[in-house]
Every structure is written in structure tokens, then in C-alpha cells.
Length: 216
Length: 215
Image 1: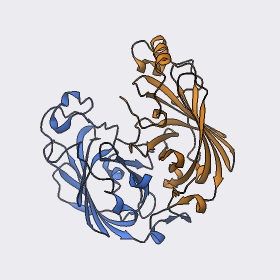
Image 2: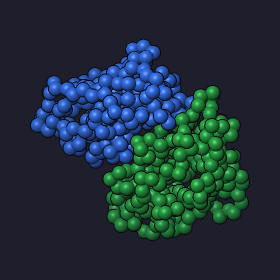
Image 3: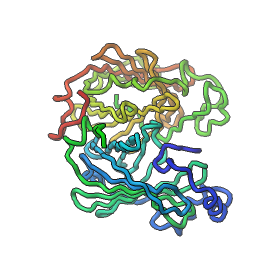
Image 4: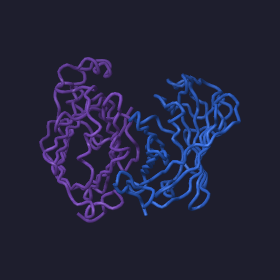
């Protein structure tokens, strides 16, 4: 099933490299990889966290986004663009909603995070404003100290199985870093999107809980 | 309206998006319904407009009624708590997030409504604060004042069909109803909620933190 509405759906995957890797490691069925991956660093669907993991993230942020221009092909060319973000906690912090506004990209995105009090896991869902669908496969995980890791098993735009990872690093109260990586071969991660967050003034950046639509 | 509170939580109900109108049910991997009749109106292709939930923005109080016993032909109703709702638009109205609390604030949940721009269809998700996951959505939309949203669920181990009905009565009043079908033929309405618009300043503040609501 092809779900193009995740962040890592924006670009087509690098097909030749992927097909080679896919043939080598996945053989017949990609789903078999769920239990067979011992080599992919850090990957787990059982990492836990605390309901307070995203407390620090409430409020307004200005960000510097860096995105790999082409994915899965060994590219090292990046593009830079700004974005603002406003995050509101709900249900006493057990759910959060933030909107990311990328003025030069003419697009916004929504992130919904929910904390499962039984598994102590966060599930992170992404909605692209141009599509308006919640991707049914969330990134799951949590923070350990200042480092948050979240993983998912999903499919690329060509239907092949991939694994994806969000990394969060709390640097200090007013600075954080987010990274997205995808593995096409169950061996290595390719980081394809990073964002550096600096806390900002909600009055200046946000309106009704959303980033103001000002010019960059 | 917190239907999951006493409804049995929606569990792993996967929408059989391929079994449209009772045709092609072969591909319905999860539903126990199989080929055959569907309760009246049931559709997974009903569409709506992006502005369907514009009216929700702001604060609401509700007057709820719940069927005492479900699926047994009961006609005895009880009054539910007067929950509060605070709704906010995101992505220029393509997503509405509606936080609901019982009067004692002991029970809460989050409704997330997302408009699929390509399909012109709303997906209605419910997040129970005690579960912390997104369930399979109900899908549909408004035709003028009436919104209908359908999906599948499991109650006490049995596959059921679920319908939400929304009726916009005027600017300050709306009605929501939940109905289940146990036999794929008839609907039993088991929960209704009358919404009355409230003042966001007094309604949508909790823990001393001002809630974010549309004016």
C-alpha cells in the first residue's frame, strides 16, 4: 500500500540502489524483515518513554530545516529553508498537536503525538496539509534522558518496505534538534531531513495555536 | 460524546475500504460481515467539504443521553454528564482538533478530524486519554446541515457498524448521535449529545493555562 502523505514521501526513492538492496536482503516478502533485522542500529518498536517527554516542546519555535535533495541514492546535496512551529499539549500532555509552517515551501504539516499509558510509548503521526490524511503507521518510541528515538516500519512510495526513524535531542531548554532517517536495506540509516529548533515568543509566532502566515 | 468511555473502546477495527456498497466484500480481510446487506445509508465513500467543521471552532457544552443497555432492544435512556469541548482548526481547516472533558475532568479525549483533500472525505479519529492511540476512523462528510460518518468497530468481540450523525441546527446549536448496527440491517441509536456554544474564555481554560481556541 502506498501512502504518500508522510514526510518521507516527498521524494521518490532511489530505485536502482534500492532494488538491488531489496533483492539482497528482503528476497520475497518485506514483512519478514520485521523480525529479522539484527543489523539496523537502534531499530526497535518497543522503546518506551514518559508522558512528560514532550512537555518541553510546548510553545513556539523557529527552525532551520535541512533536507536531502535526493534520497536513497547516496546524495550529499541539501536544501535549507525556514519554518515556524506552534505546539499545544492536550489531555494534560498525553497528546500533543503541532503545526509546522514552511513559508517558502507553500506547505504546512501537522504532527499528532499520543502517549499510550499502558505501553509507555509515544506514537507520532504526521499530516501533510496538501493531502490531509493521517498516516496510519506512526513512529513509536520515547525519550531516554535528552534523547528521543522513534521508529516505524513502513513502505516507500514504490511499495517496498523501509524503516524510518525520528531522533530528538533536547540540547537545552530553548534548543532542540530533530532528524529523520530512512533505512532501505536494514543495515544503514540515511538521514534525509534535520531541523534545529530555537524557542521563540508565542505572541510573535503563533495565532490561535498555529503559526502565523507571515512572510519569511 | 466520549463514546469510548462506556462504549467499549474501538479496537483495531480496520475499515474495509474495499467493500463498498456490499460489493467486493471478498477483499474485506478484517470484517466478519462478508457479502450481504448493509444497514441503511452505510457508505465508506460519502464525501464532504473542507469547511464542514468550521462551525465547531470554539467552545461547547453538551447535554448527553445514553441508552442504558445496548443491542438488546432497550428504550431506557439515562442522562450523561455535560461535557465541555474546545475545538481548534489546523492546516487552514483541513484538521480540527476537539478536546473533550467530563465535568470532573477525570475522563477526557481528543477528536481529530482530518479532511482528505484528494478524496474530499473526512476521517474522524478518537483518542482516549487512557489509551493514547488513534483508532480506525469513521469516514464521511456533510451534505448541507447533515453530516454522516461510517466505519466498523468491535464490541464485545463482535463486528459492528458504527454511524455518527451530525446535525447543524443553527450557529450555536448542533446535535450528534451515535448508532450501532449489530445485524447489518438496522441501526440502534445509543448515544446523543446536544451541543450548545459556550464562551471560550470561561470554558477552555484548564490548569491555569489558557486553552487555544478560535474566537
